[in-house]
Length: 303
Length: 234
Ligand SMILES: Nc1ncnc2c1ncn2[C@@H]1O[C@H](COP(=O)(O)OP(=O)(O)OP(=O)(O)O)[C@@H](O)[C@H]1O
Ligand SMILES: [Mg+2]
Image (cartoon, rainbow over all chains, first blue to last red; front, side):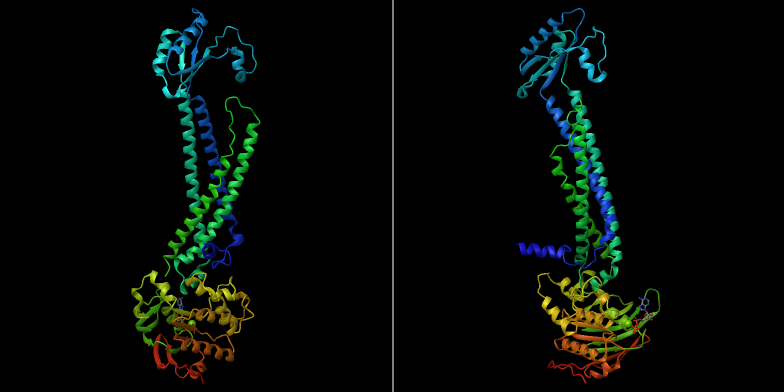
């Protein structure tokens, strides 16, 4: 088994001396371009994974949670509004708990946005009730909303639906954008490899002719090129992915240093880094298949 | 083995360099092809090793009509033909040894144990010491012998040699001729294009084709010993 694998490798990979000379130093521009492509692909992948994870986290935090908001009215006692709302909630099946969130002053709530400023005392801050739902038998929220509005003037039910759907749409469009970028990057890489394969074949035209004349099949000759480009794709891919990993890591360090209030944990998680292994594998595969197809099609036009 | 009938050939839109060429090589024969420079010897060989197509006429190799063959049939046919190119056409980045291995490498699995045979052959042509040298560091005569070794290593059914003794001294020329007769004894049909009439005179059983101005004439028919006795050299 091992011996057969070694045979296979010796035949496919230019380990000993390849029949087509590797262009050696002349190949660095190709490595550079493909490495840049792989870097961009890795960054796109890293950002997509981070965004979808953050969106998932936020959605999960908000799943099974609704908030009842009660605005104080000058004509009503706020305590009775709250106790009426609590009574309705406790009568509704499918609700695990309802807790009043301790009231803060408007100044405290607004401090992260406005800084510590003097606010007039009479700004009415709504009272909030945090409601946990039983995931197995969620109550009919629109009916509950109507009952609350009827019974408690100034009460409003917020199921975070709009927020969640906007978050999902945002994450979705970012993912779509990254996917489109990835597609373009792959297309550009294919174009580069086609170009480079043709140039390499042109440079080795004489050798290819001799190989044909001594009885080499197209697949043998194409094999030489596909093996060379496989390695180019792999090396450049590793380079690009490592560069992107370094960048993402630096960004994570940078952003975790600052405790942002409304964008918690925009850091790249550890699961992102193993996923970047896909990038060199993908670029090696793309380079291999493209070089093979290009070589075979060029060869099919020779005698 | 090889049969040409009224074959004409031209390069691009140029004049015909071969006109109404008809001849045949019988299996197991040794043949010489002579003619002045520019007469069309190399062009004729190119038709045989399938590097060019005729513009008219019919060529049959090993019994199959060449015009009927597709690209995918070519490698199998070419593997039955060994060629010593006039300008050698060695791969400069490979050693002499690797160059000689090439026909075996493209035709067989890499597991095949041909290295010892290749070493023996190179030693026989006097390159035992220069096996790992690359062609650019070899002399003209040394390159020629590498080219010959590459052409014969796979024991082809047909050997086409274009000026194979042009760059070596007469002694080595005879030694190489002996290599060809040895190969011929094992069944290979041989065609040698040469300017060297002494080779032709030395090999009495060999056929002799002469080409001039694109026309071919058979000067002497090859004799093939039915008992497979080696061709004698004078
Ligand atoms: N690739 C080519 N394109 C155009 N004309 C060619 C080409 N190769 C050869 N010729 C012409 O064809 C004619 C025959 O050439 P060829 O090489 O067959 O001669 P030759 O008999 O091998 O000569 P020599 O003994 O010098 O090797 C010559 O007139 C040559 O100029
Ligand atoms: Mg010639």
